[in-house]
Image 1 (cartoon, rainbow, N blue to C red):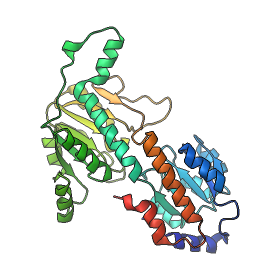
Image 2: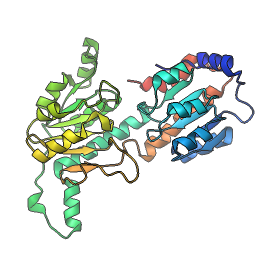
Image 3: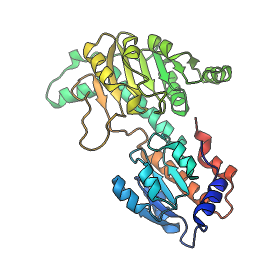
Image 4: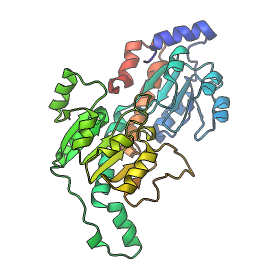
Length: 348
């Protein structure tokens, strides 16, 4: 998927005759928020320009003389941005998802891509459980009612977790952590993956997860959590047929990407309450300031603004990894295998 650093440099030299990083280090465009200590370290050692919250036009202008971009999920690296960055040789995704760029185009251009999936996984798993608990115990509704002066204790009988089946759609680094947390609460994890092999079944069994197909996960689970990347194979993965077969009284948590769950179908299912009892979403089809979810008016829905990895601890670790990647890339003879060990070990 990723172009080796050495090959990337060879292509760049052949195309543009680019020199190695100069005395001011790597010319970096930081397009997303980064841990303050990591940003300060980058600024001290490299030529750093910030473009937080920039439009596509502003990114095109800012990237013209940059060798590297550091970015997160809120930034789309469109073809126009990559066209403008003729000197780009390194992209650092400060997180895991890659649905905000065209991988084939990046590879075609000979740009080296690194992501940092590991540090955020624990934070995302913890938020998954926070949302799950909000649904099970009606915590958000209870808070709203009490703020309005209504002592709604008799209306707020919730669901317990112990002994319930926890369905995990996507048993990767995040899904495994969710299963671990589930077991600690006495839940029984079942999961599904895109490619189920005997080896994958064995490793999942060792983690206490029974691997089945998606249909079985939906049929059996009291709580379903979603942790898959967004691509053509997963877009609309949870649609009307899938929602219809969920257990009566079940809950859905989507903390993957908005397009994985059909929001229109989810709205209808929640209004009908035939099977699905509630849902929580940290990710949305339309994200950003001023956007209102079509689910916002439902009392049995919890919504958060894509904050899965937004903990001080996770962002500090991600910042350190970003710094390490850039520092290693800046070395005159950085080797492809060494580059791969920086962030590649967390790939699913």
